[in-house]
Amino acid sequence: MTTLTAAVVQAAAPLFDTQAALTRAGELIREAVLGHRAKVVVLPEAFLGGYPKGLDFGISVGNRTPAGRDLFRRCHAAAVDVPGPEVDTLAAVTRELGCHAVVGAVERQGGTLYCVALYFGPGGYLGLHRKLMPTAGERYLWGQGDGSTLPVVDTGTARLGAGICWENYMPLFRTAMYAKGVDLWCAPTVDDREAWQATMRHIALEGRCFVLSANQFLRRDALPADVHPVLGDEPDTVLIGGGSVIVSPLGEILAGPLRGGEGILAAELDLDELTRARFDFDPTGHYARPDVFTLHVDESVRAGVVSG
Image (tube, rainbow, N blue to C red; front, side):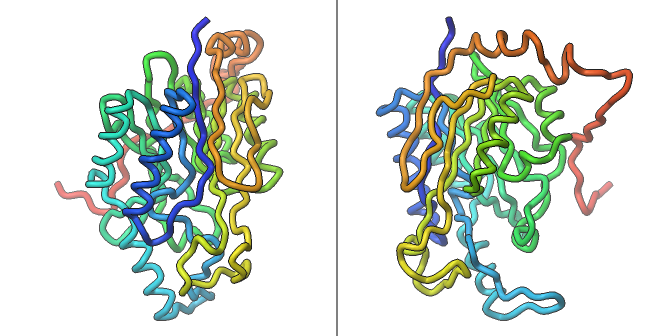
């Protein structure tokens, strides 16, 4: 039997304080590895850079405000460059610990921000996935990724892939990732609804993979005093309610969902369960019908300006 211990971290991401977020991310990865013996660690969506839950940025149809523009400036300043010093710092952590980590972040490239999942391993930084479609109001904060950042990372014992928050509802994206042979489906998110649990169990069953979903637990008092989320200004108002979970390839909950506070969930994964689960269902293998359905995936870089 081949086993691997995986951990998902449920914690608040400091907003507009990149150094604090970076320090906390390193501490949490270290705790998951040393305290729970995890070899794979997943942190929530936008952990580096922060998720501005409940902030409206002064947007209405056809109108922007100076205050909203300055709020975006603060988000831009808190984002990270890839490559950059924050990436280098976390790469040093995973090299030291000999683990793999998937860390949610906000990437800055020029005037555009991207919601990303950063991959790290014993060799350091391994690459990133940019969220293909920001959800609802996220679209005035974040740009769209393209097909050039759909990596799957081979750890030597299992293959890691990531879908960020509502990307997990995109069936064609899931199919493309299943075809890459994902064994551990990492889902950094801020979706704390009960319905999210059904989605995570469905993906585990559909993809015949382990699902590692890491969410934030965020209260109002963790945000700067000068921002005012629409959910309320009382210090103990819960803005993101957690729900981190680990699911088996047959849809069984192995750990979680975690509610009511921060914490780390860990589970020892029996990797032989992957093959057992795929015995009767392999979505892009023996259960596919390529004579009826074919998916074409464009993995080229889509640049707005091409010099030639």
